Length: 110
Length: 485
Image (cartoon, rainbow over all chains, first blue to last red; front, top):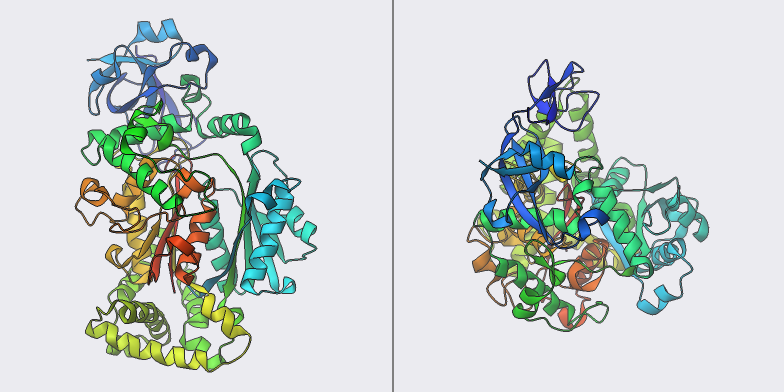
């Protein structure tokens, strides 16, 4: 129960995010929504010093990461911890509780 | 490519300050560029512009043409973000080679400084996915800082390398009276500046300035009339024929087309021998002659002529003599025209989440190979490079993708003076987006001025070959040109 959803193509089997009317890999319209494992690895983690979101501006500086999910698509997420704890290649998992609490996808190290 | 850059213009600060708005600024830039090119108003067949961010217009190019009293066949506003100026040149080449236009003018002007905050906000909103990115609060520097962090953590760059790009770019700007920021920067100033996103600080980010500039792309007949036979030999009509043949292979997919094009380009890139030219007939001959024309220029200038190049010089020498014999008004234009040896693009994604995370350098690296192949050059042949520098990391990534580091890495390349005055390869000699002006149009304008020898205190002696890149989005839309004189 990661709560992370992707679209999977019934023809080529690959996943995509955001929702589209057709598969970006093969063009098929045979798509289904699937729940992902919630597992992935870090592409890179940065620190936001200036935020475009008013609700988050008070929290600056805050770490922000790009995660390559097991299913293929990449997702942006907040992290539980410091930026330095989330180097490129680090294995992470969606933290369902933290995500629910903040209303934004959040990951922790696994 | 059979088109040339025949005119460029950049409005000065006083002229800009007096402009009523972006349309007027665009119009004045177009007028100045046409004057620079010596192209008559009636000979302008297409007006291209890039819409204003602060005063969007449904049909801006039309409005600019109307302001000037021009009645071109085509007026179109191009929108590829930061890649737009180079993309517009590629479109202009297409219009010219298809015979749909003789001269194409492109202008980019905006008055952003006064409404800096809103303009930045609007740009930030445009680049982030509203559901999967924007709620996390990224601004454009945040998105590029992911790439900076990736570059650093993957061992391809250090924080200091990126800072040196800001320092060395500023050193060029100090030599350019038109640059916005001219006070030299120290490495410490860049490293100690307030952070904006991840490793990127204030001086790693481009300026937001007012600007207006334009360029003119012309077909060869308008650059200097050629006799019909010569024109055919130089590749004009042959190339069109070749493309028609390519397009006529019904059902051939894009990959196959690219494969064929790659073979053609490889042939040109390898300085095709005389038998090969003879064997391939009209198309091969035209292209080989065109490729060696540039090679010969360089061989003559640099004195490193190989046997192939020497042969090329002989052919090109013939062209030149013929050209000089024309003795009409076209001659002056011919002598200032900058040839476009290649153009290549790669529009891989829009939002950073859709980027090729396996290797963000893959697309621009492939593009570089395609571009160098078209022009028959390698990175070591470049005399100048104008790399889009929305952020220091944008330039750092490209120094690798275009092979400018010669495989030695950024640390070796950027050791002072690096890419600054007196360095291994002059990059962004006008001061780029980091220190001079906000649009990538001025990367092209500066390349043309340098190649013409009109760059004043910052003139790079004997520069004959220049690479120019423009980028839109988050390393999303790459468009590059190879220019020579």
